Image (cartoon, rainbow, N blue to C red; front, side, top):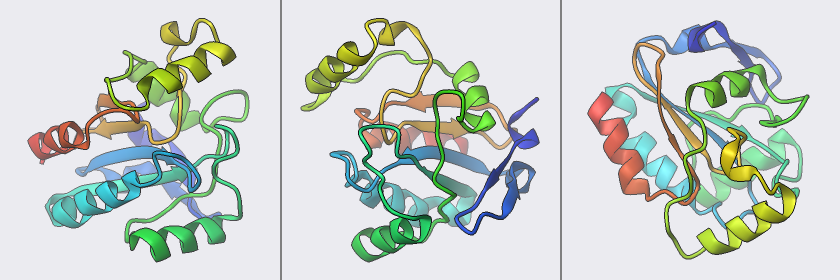
Length: 180
């Protein structure tokens, strides 16, 4: 199976076939409203506004698996994001990205782009400390480590990059711009 063979559910719980995104560059990102990385919504919205007309789509999948940092209903999460960050891109149904209840899409994404480490940043050491307390082998498995992990999919459905939440958003933008 490839990227376009999966379906996900939007915030209204309607099925959304990813084949609807054929020919587009797509960023798939697991998000949370109560996380230290939540301000990245501003950067993601800026990318959407800058590149949407050129073919960028954002698939925002709220996830409550990392210390319960996405509380509330899908409607409450959407309201928070539009009120605080003026997000215009669609949000999907809150879902798991790891474990037995993870979206099948995430199994595919992780199989295509595994974890390659965190970029240095002000919170990197704290994140490593938290993760090593949860999973001593976290560096050697492809699981999603935290909120705001981004996968970039090219116009042909290839998962070409994975950016951890500590990645510089300029690097994310550079990758997206090169594919448009």
